[in-house]
Each structure stands twice: as structure tokens, then as C-alpha cells.
Image 1 (cartoon, helix red, strand yellow):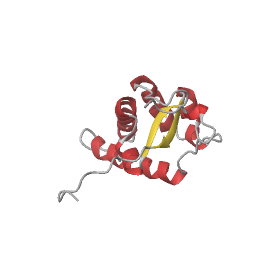
Image 2 (image 1 turned 90 degrees about the vertical axis):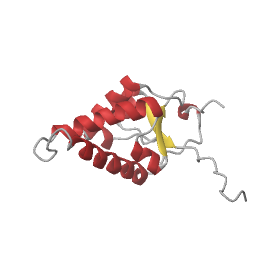
Image 3 (image 1 turned 45 degrees about the vertical axis):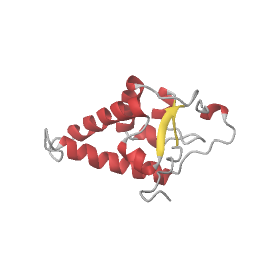
Image 4 (image 1 turned 180 degrees about the vertical axis):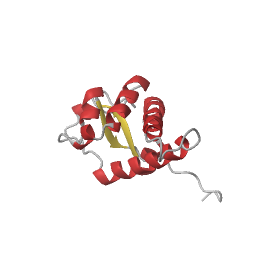
Length: 137
């Protein structure tokens, strides 16, 4: 089944800012952890930011969600067709998100400047399919 484009869905309801912020906190913590392997995140403030941008480029570009987004059950998709945005657009989105200010100015779909610049939107992730129990019940 093809994803429904948020731009074409009059019932589209974006996820809460709390879920988005929670996902960002998880992703930021992961980027600090990874950045600590090749630099001192406290002394070299650029390393966690570069790591976060790379994390967004890889995970959002290829899978539509970062680890934090997966935990928050949200994903980042193309606003016009509901599909993946690709690595290049995800890298640009991550770089703009690193500037912070674009993320604070949102439209009615809770799309910050970083989302509008690359044509993306954050949506609720579809529910995960139920896993069969080990007992077969």
C-alpha cells in the first residue's frame, strides 16, 4: 500500500512537540556518545553537531527515522508523496536542524524551516505489527 501524502490528507495531524523533542534528546545523547570516541564533546563542541547531522543523513535518509524517532514512534517523510526523503535532503535537514532557529519557527503542520527547505514533515509512525507469542496463544 502506497503511503498517503501528508500534503494531500486534510485529516493529517502532526505528532506532538513532546514526541519530537523526546526523539531529539535521544538522538542528541547518542551523538554525544559517538562523538566521544573521536573527540572531547565538551571541549570540541562541533563533534556532536557533526555526528548528529551524519546520524540524520544516514538514518532519516535511508530508513525514514533516527533511533530516537523510532523510540518516539515518529518518522520523517516527504511532504508531497509520503516517501523517504533520501540521504542528501536528510543531510541538509540535519544541518539546518543544527542551527536550532529554523526548528523553532513552525507552520500549522509543525514543519520548521528545516522541514520546509527539504520538503519533509514528521508524522506518526505506523503501528508495529503484533508479534506472535512464544506459547502460540
